[in-house]
Image (cartoon, rainbow, N blue to C red; front, top):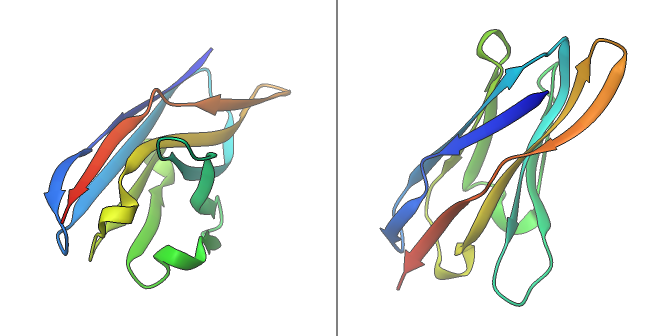
Length: 119
C-alpha cells in the first residue's frame, strides 16, 4: 500500500507565495511520475504540473513562469512552489503519483490541500 501526504496549503493574498509538499510512503519500488492537480468549485480537475523521475516537467499554460515543480527522489517527495498567486489559483490541490510497488503499477492520490488566494 502507498500513501501520499500533502502539506503547505493555506490562505494567501494575491501576489503572494506558497509551497506545497507531497511525501509518498509505503511499499514503493519506483515513482515514475509525480504531479499536482487542482479542482476549483464547479470546475473539472486539471493538471497543474508534472515531473518525471528524470526531471522533465510539464506545466499548465496559466501557471508557466509562476509555479515550479521539483522532486527529491531520495525522499519520494514532490514540491510545488507557487509564486505571484492569483485569485483564480484558488482550488483544492491534489498530489498524484505513478508508483511501481514490486511489479504492480499504482496510481495514487493525496487527500488534497486547499489553497485560497484573496484579492
